[in-house]
Amino acid sequence: MYVTSHALSGAAIGAVTASAGYPSWVAFIAGFVSHAVLDSIPHHDYTSLPGAVVDLLLTGGVIWIVGSLYPTHYLWFWGLFGATIPDLEVGLKHLFPLWGIKLRYPSHSGLLPHPQIPFWPGVLPQILSAIICFGILIHLAA
Image 1 (cartoon, rainbow, N blue to C red):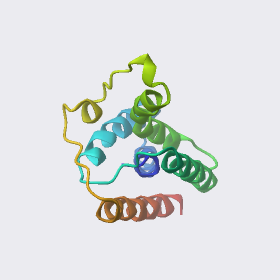
Image 2: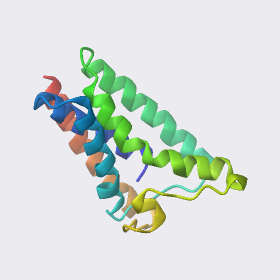
Image 3: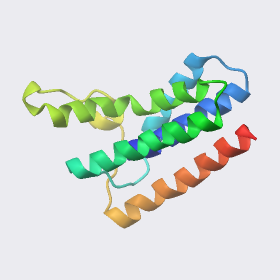
Image 4: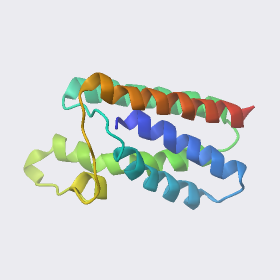
């Protein structure tokens, strides 16, 4: 999944945990686990630098939008952070190939499934999850 997809799901998880009264570490752990759940859905992952740049810019937009929806609390951020931190190892591996970074997150290392499919069918589940997560975020912010 794109980082944007993980960011939106993590932010929604953080907002849900906040509304339930849970502490920030619960939002972080739930977001972290959600990364593997989303990675198990057949999806498309980009393989180019321009794709990564667009994804990171979109993720920045997500952070800005969600931050404006929730200006008084930041539990959404801990869910987002937990959901996106596993992709840091992927980014570092591609940026610094000579370092020999070994992927450790279960869906990145091959321990859990991470099915890849072509662009259009692989983007559709990400668009659907974005719509659902934005709906949750807007509903809880109201």
